[in-house]
Image (cartoon, rainbow, N blue to C red; front, side, top):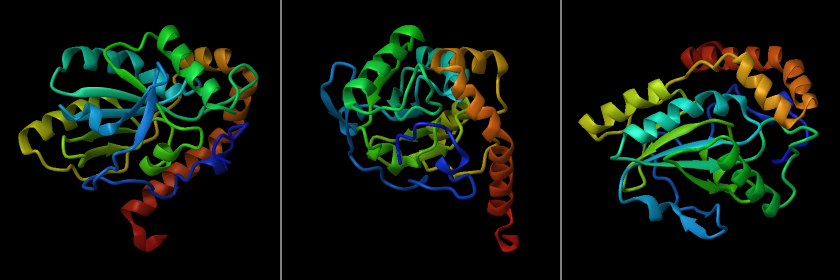
Length: 230
C-alpha cells in the first residue's frame, strides 16, 4: 500500500537503490501546484532544477528545511522544486492521504507552517506515480538539467552535499556518479516537533522500527560496495 497508515520497515527498500538514476532522462511528469493547477516538469526547465521530496511528517525533510531555504535564496541559476509525497510518518493528527484534497491541504499547511521560501511546491498524485519513478524514499534530492537529464541523485538529502554537486555540475555539465550516502541520524528537537504535529503514535512507530531500519540501511550500503558478498 503506497499510502501506508503506519510506518513500518517493509515500506522502504533500503537494501537496493531503486528508481531513476543519475544519467537517465526523467519523464515529463505532471503534478499539481498549491492552487490545484496542473503543471509538468517542462514548465520549470528554463533553468536546471533542484527537486526535493518531502512531507509534513518527515523529520529528515524538516531537518534540511532551513539550509534548503537559504540555498534557494542564494542560488539564482536553478529552479528549486519541492515534490509533496506520501506522509513519511502518519499518525493520529496527520494521517495517510485518502484523497488529493487531503494531500493538497497538507501541502498548503506545510507551506504556511514551515515557511517554505524560494521554492515551488508541487504535489504528486494520490498513488505516488512520480514518487515511485524517483525511488519512493521520503527525502531524496535531484539535479535535473534543462534536457531532463538527471545529473545528480542523493537518496537522503544533505544540503551541503547538494551544493557541492551543483558546483561540480556548473563546471562539467555531466552526470555525477551516484554514491551510497549515510542515512542521517535523528535530530531529536526536529523529530520532537514533527511527531508532536503528526501524533505521538507516529513517533512510537518510528522508535520501534529504527533499529531494523538502521541495520537494513547499513547492510544495503555494504552490499552496494561489496556486491560479491551479498
